[in-house]
Amino acid sequence: MDFEYKKSIISYYDNTQLDYRFLWFRKNNRSVHFGYHDEDTLSHGDALNNLNRVMANKGDIKNGDIILDAGCGQGGSSIWLAKNFDVQVTGITLVPHQVKIAKKEAKKHQLNGRVQFFEKDYTKTSFKDESFSLIWACESMCHAEQKEDFYKEAFRLLKPGGRLVCADYFRTERPLKKEGEELLHAWLSGWSIKDIDTFHEHKENALKTGYADFEIKDITSFTRPSLQHLYSMASKLWKLGTFLKRIGIRNKINHGNHYASIKQFEALENNLWYYGLLSLKKE
Image 1 (cartoon, rainbow, N blue to C red):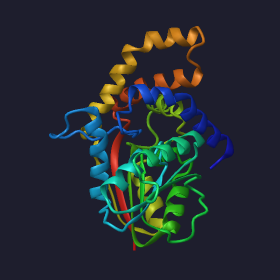
Image 2 (cartoon, one colour):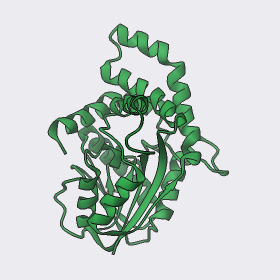
Image 3 (cartoon, rainbow, N blue to C red):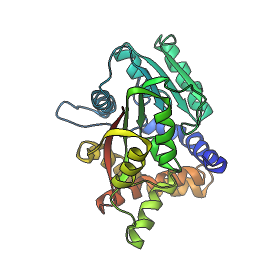
């Protein structure tokens, strides 16, 4: 991954950590994802945990699995996995402050023996070949500059028969019309995402790398309540956010994150992207 792009991702998460802390995280849950709403979901916190369950089921997690959480954020999913399964979890992220917080959370939950965190690039790690039985990526592969690089490194790291499960954003087509591309990137650039790929681009990269059982399931309807919630919050706070930026309390990155939170939902409503659950296997 390009050095300057890495720096932009780190800067984004450094500058927006308070936004996530106060507007998104819940007690004992530091998941930086949109969650999954079904008939049993009663709250935002429930939805965050529920997406972990949906991904775990899709990844067919078993006791004894050795899991890489690729793009682990503050360790929310890693800690959930270790608390709910008899597994070993390694979380990696580019962002130093996230590693620090994740380690602190693991210690608080008394999981130090089964969870570890490192500052690493998931497209070029230093782990040995065939180190993991499952790779988990929750709203993190989107940050890969070239998605093929993510697939190649994950393939190298997976044991034979290992699985890869990802929840992420997928563009509906390439290219979109000019105004569609502009709207899509108004969202992506605000969250330090270079681009997102189509179903066919993901499939091509995965199959030529050597994976099997490729599947992407559209689960947008289950994430829509959280997407709409973010849009509603961001829209209501827009005038305040603009004022705070003007007087210097919020910076360009904070403001870009806020703007992107509005444009993401507008792009969804214009059918420019969807939220998908991806799964595949290394034979």
